[in-house]
Image (cartoon, rainbow, N blue to C red):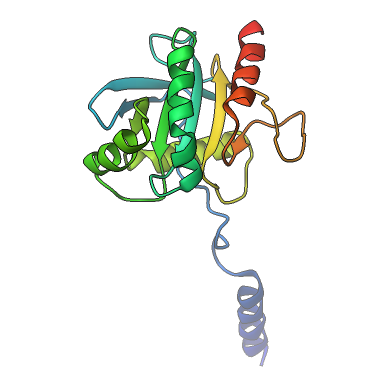
Length: 197
């Protein structure tokens, strides 16, 4: 009888507690400080990111401010702001590197060139790689963003640190990301403040 009670108790504990990590709570793979990530654009250009200060810098050009744009070729707001982002990159090329990470779709580099870059005048550095998911996981973990990533999604880094930028929805002064189509004047204003810091 005692054996039976122990067995039933054990079963009830396992039934209510489980015997592993709860679904959705497992840590997604991320990059660690010191990791180097070689990025190859859809047209073959290369940049190496270095994981530093809890964020990223460009290896060999650490003074550059990074603007990461997480987008999808299918995303209408992404398409609408692509030309403005290109103009922003050209205007700020001495201080900023804009890197677009194609996310949430599996397409070829040629598809991205034909159906996004050429079509919407997006000739900045665009990465279409399976590595993008790990980079996005790292970014969202770094800034403690625990919701599903909505496109477009942008962050700004200086010296490897995520910068506080304008929250166009809730006016949170600690905000570290843009969601959705953002007026390029807002991004420029934030960049001008960041450059002075």
